[in-house]
Image 1 (cartoon, helix red, strand yellow):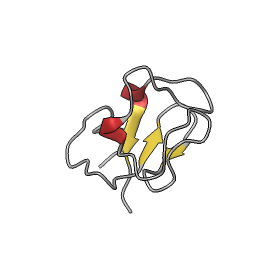
Image 2 (spheres, one colour; image 1 turned 90 degrees about the vertical axis):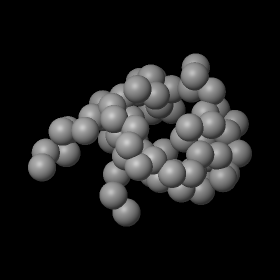
Image 3 (cartoon, one colour; image 1 turned 135 degrees about the vertical axis):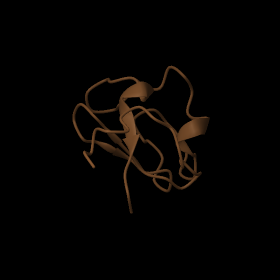
Image 4 (cartoon, rainbow, N blue to C red; image 1 turned 180 degrees about the vertical axis):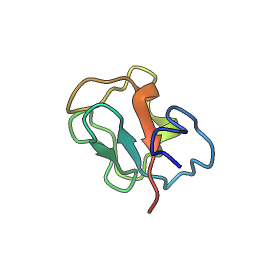
Length: 69
């Protein structure tokens, strides 16, 4: 299975799922939050505001894909 096969699909994303930007590979880890956007640790990806974007390359949320732990 290709890493991009489920690109943009939000299946099996839990509150602790880490997601990776498909543009620059930055990882959003809910345990860490996002200091740049002042997102508190413990914030799941689904709870991020719609206007949130990758802190590294400015990609929208839709470019993030779940990564396996």
